[in-house]
Image (cartoon, rainbow over all chains, first blue to last red; front, side):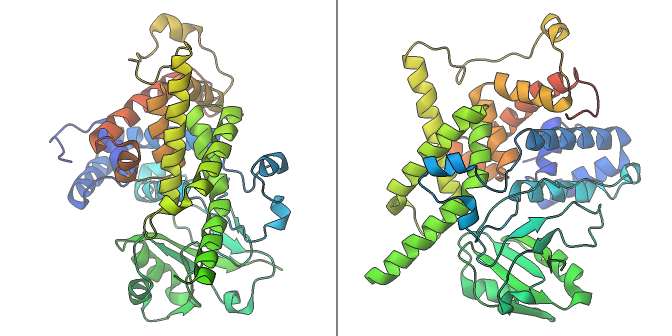
Length: 223
Length: 177
């Protein structure tokens, strides 16, 4: 999409917030928003509207028993593979991360605390905790329940776009301080143990890598 | 593929579908603008996905395939309603509310206003909101699902957001309950 010099529409700001712009256009919008408080305010308004939409249709962690029965499925308690992640919120959270650099938004971003998306990672439930602001120093997810030993050292999850072959995924994950735990899960996630001192930087690099859909820290559940 | 492997693969796909249900339910609620209709659509989509799972191409995104099933089923539902004589707004022009109409709008909270906007807006706008904002699809994925150009996705998003904003502006600021 080409940008009209001097005129930034809601459409263009929204495309930037949704990560729908080419790198060059995104950089230009980002610079304009950073330099123009009115544009930054408008971007924040659009982000707020999206957040309201997500909150208006909250993502439940599990389905009601009555609905499961209609679908011919056992009750949620009997399906222990549930894991909780919300891609919509994660995608949205990337935009606030950009906006949060600006001084006028120093109040911190509320990244989707009501997240709940079951993706079947195959080793115990994950619970999404409230966000801790723009710097996100803590993991957004925690492993719950009786995780197998192999998963106990897992401190990060990565998912790639569909079509990325396991060998390619392993090659992309092959970085100093990174250990891949086991094979890809049935939901397509890769469990990693990253040296704690390198975790934030490694995940940031991975998140910026093309074809990486998700790169998030996780922690063992508090005892 | 040996029978045992095929059975295992099918079992894994079924597990992925089951694990995907909460997100699919949210998408269906967004598509229909109504929780009850959303659950009906969820059920129809899940049944269709299971019955047509052989049509899903391994290596492509399973979730996007299911989203498209849900979207198509919703369009079928709206078309059926139209045939029966019920007014359906999927293809109709939709103007923003005028000042007089706005003056009559009162909402308890911003979330109340968003719910009203989602229920009021044309189905085609709700569809793009459900895809991009609720399901987290990229513009390209949403365009592919709806078989429309990316530019149309963007313009529909903008129109939908204006409808939402118009109503949110009538609600007490910062209220969500």
